[in-house]
Amino acid sequence: MPLTVTISDLRLPDAFPVLRGTYWPWRPAELERLAGQLAPGAVIEEGGLWHVGRTDRHLIEVYAASRSFRIAEVDDEDEDELQRAGDAGLDRDKAVDRALEYLALFRPDGADLTVVDVVDSTVSVSGSPDQEPRRLVVSTDVCLGFSRKEVAFVGPGAKAQVSLRADGEVRSAYLMWRDVEEIGTVTARSADEVAAAFGSMPGFAGLTDDTARVEVTSAVAGVYALPPTEPQQLFHPAVELRGTVTTEHASLGFCTWVSAVDPARFGRSRPGERRTPPPEVLVA
Amino acid sequence: MGTLGVEWVRKYNGLAGDLTNTQAQAEGFYNTLSGVRSFNWGDDLAWDQDFEQLGSGTPSSGTDTTWADNVDAVFFSGHGSQGAFHFGRRIDDAAAKNTEVVLGDWDLEFAALDACLVLEESGVFGRWGWPVFKGLHVLCGFHTVTGDEPHRGRIFAQYLNAGRTVREAWIRAAQDTEGSGTQWAYLRADGAGGSTYTDHWWGQGPIAPDPTSPTTLFYARGAC
Image (tube, rainbow over all chains, first blue to last red; front, top):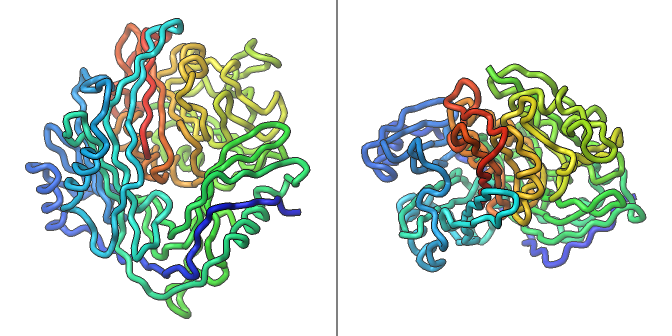
């Protein structure tokens, strides 16, 4: 017997685009240009999982499997989290302006970049169990998401973040992306169909409405982008669900993904081609 | 060379909803990190007492000196909450609670609890800090709920093998595998012997002496 699941405020389009990743390895000239933009003087050397470049102040990591990269300040040996942390972070509007200015050079073609959240990265320090911890802001992190023709990317592999010191200096940044081409459309599931599929998933097989209650607190639909370390051929439409499952034993949080289309009708980029398996994160 | 162990739970036997990707996640860490593989317990063979201190809690049947505290790095993948990480079999009470866990007094340096909310900020020093850190260097986890996904253990190990510090590797692995609504977190301890801020996995860089009597605890969190 499936669990009853209600998902309120889930907006789904009538159809999702079928997106295929267009992958090519980083060319030496591209790596050289990227190094010049991120940290002049760095030389990015081709490696296995990451192509890596360094200066005395920065470490650049370029993901071999996608069009993604990150840059971070290099810590001195005698540093810790408190180095340059302060009581307050950068003003939110200034942080957003600075982040968009920083990313302007790297924005991929055909994708829209939207600010999703601005979050302070913090450190708390405790000197003894009896002492109130001291809390400081290490950086103000501007989190951005990609979308394409008003369809958002969900999952980890299509997003960007710029972490800024209180003085506006960039402490670290990353951009995760793959170039895509649209090769068709596929009909979306309705919100009720998504809820029913989630309630029927094998993970709930041991639970009934008498023994468990599911509460969905957020639901976001889009096309799922794998981690930037993974090659990706097709982008499966999915709904990210967050919430809690309460049983007699415990009330536990979850974050999971449900297919936003009928899985049986998705998976081939061309008729007759080998079927691309759905991402392992999809539970229904 | 360091030693490592993993435990994971997919089947919760009606105690909670089952998970899908915990085995792949934990075994990705186990099979990728450069080191001596000591134990890999999953589902009904993963027990909360493997993480618990003998004599702590009720029932006080902890065996961590044989398992979690008998290796250099341990990785758990399953359900979590602010005060415990959860198992699927009631050998003990199916929850390794913060009141039953003391780590590092035998061997353990690094632990990753890949589970929701264990390292939520509010009250974290009193839950998983001062009572738990007795030689443990770094405890990695999440401030928020986190995804049931298969890649993070392997990617965390790949960063460690590539020479990133433990805290850098965890932050990168979390950012690579989560949407920006999730927040990574870690706790770490400094002792009289030095700072664990730049601790690496064995063979990849410096490691501070064990902070058996920590002088300072640090808790950090940020957006994935």
